[in-house]
Length: 188
Image (tube, rainbow, N blue to C red; front, side, top):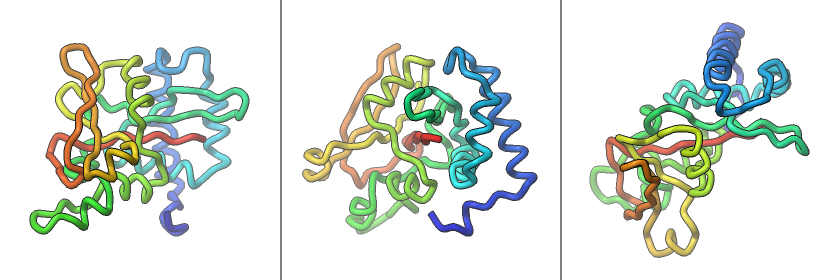
């Protein structure tokens, strides 16, 4: 993440905070007992994290607070869009997979995009936890962090929700589909 990218205009900043506040208040089931004023105070002290949330929003992720670590005083935001974020689809898993494609390369990879945005791609465990808060990816799928032993063999894993069940699948890491993207999280 380059420093010049993490500066939002005051208009962008205010619009983002209003959007996040409205989503936070509309979806209290995702964060019972938390107060928006405390979340906003935390955001206002960290322009880099605010920029990452802006990127999550800009690419269709609809980020919202899904956890609070009282010990560390951190809030976890996660992409809560009903389907895998539109602006992050049609990507292979990582740079190695992207470079290995000889023809029809996608424009980017999930791991590179997440790093550029300053967010973490969800693990399978985090993905399953998110699914406890609603029904996500009922028509799409999302790459999740792949264990090294699977990635070493050329594979990657992704998840979706079908038949009221969360499924984990495998594919070549260099594959990409219009309906597969990735979800991210950010600790603030």
